[in-house]
Image (cartoon, rainbow, N blue to C red; front, side, top):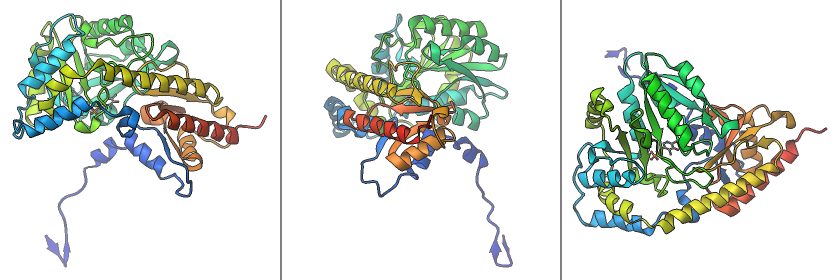
Amino acid sequence: MENGGVIRWRFGCNDELTKASAITVRGVLNTLMDNLKPEDSRPVIPLGHGDPSSFPCFRTTPLAVDAVCDAVRSAKYNGYGSTVGIPPARSAIAEYLSKDLPYKLSPDDVYLTIGCTQALEVILEVLARPNANILLPRPGFPYYESRAGFCHLEVRHFNLIPERGWEVDLDAVEALADENTAAMVIINPGNPCGNVFSYEHLKKVAETARKLGILVISDEVYDHLTFGNNPFVPMGIFGSIAPIVTVGSISKRWIVPGWRLGWLITNDPNGILKNQGIVDSIKGYLNISSDPATFVQGAIPHILKNTTNEFFTKIVNTLKEAADLCYDRIKDIHCITCPSKPEGSMFVMVKLNLSLLEGIKDDVDFCCKLAEEESVIVLPGVAVGLKNWLRVTFAIEPSSLDDGLGRIKAFYERHAKKQ
Ligand SMILES: *Cc1c(COP(=O)(O)O)cnc(C)c1O
């Protein structure tokens, strides 16, 4: 409508999107980057990221690269796939995951998604009925909060307990749940804590879920990236106690997050998810969504069947050495303490002791000044739900990690409170 030469445009922004994306890891990291000083000639040390694919020691296996190239060249995967994923890829993933389970997954339990991220999107949207709520870990992975908020799924938080190796506070889970609670989320191996849950603890999680009549969403995007006392145990093992939806991808174990290939698995030997209509809702949501690139799906059977143990072992050993180095060097930096040595994933959470520092307000202030003075990027705990903590990524080249931790120590010594 034209009114005195001024056009009144009828469209405007969606405020809910601005709200949903207010706190994201990438958003916080971008803010920190703005504090870097261009005149510092030293390389920037990134200890805030979750994507080590650019570092030579974390390069993926050539076998996976060849599998993708072969899939493209075969010309068999130039078309659309099916909305749930192409059959050979679903079968290969069912077989790959069944190796660690007491029962066999059917290809029909497997839905291919655009990374683990889309798998989360699917299950959160499926559960977002009016008035429903979901229980999330704190600290956690902020995508859950953003996405749940955006689809009006109420979020309630239970704590992970640092003194108990970041185990779930199961009493809190029971206290939070009510008749509108649909699910609880665990992330194992953990982001941001680098913890790995024991078999016994996971069994208790399943028993709690059964008691409450809820399902467990198990984010296993770091599956098998473990290097401590607890081996990786897939939550699906307990699928007969309570229904489990497992989400995962090749992003972290194969270090190819840009390939965008993930999955959602229904671990449900008793058919409860099916009876409750969840399986139909998952299919329905995928019918109105986009799919992972067909040629990456085409490469999946080869990648899953033929990747050598040598590659996996090399990556896990690199992570273990980096985690050990990180843990040892942190002991020397008195303003941060690590309550629990990392045993998996790529991260460790450390607690900031502000009383030992002069002129540092909080975790965000610490990280901004660290970026400015030392060109080191570390994620402030608020970004993952724990104020005045820090999340440190150790998945980078060892020499850079060493350099970065040395700079954090120098930063601490410069800002230490005089006695
Ligand atoms: C990286 C990550 C994801 C997303 O994985 P993609 O496969 O890259 O989409 C999901 N959950 C957690 C905890 C992650 O760290």
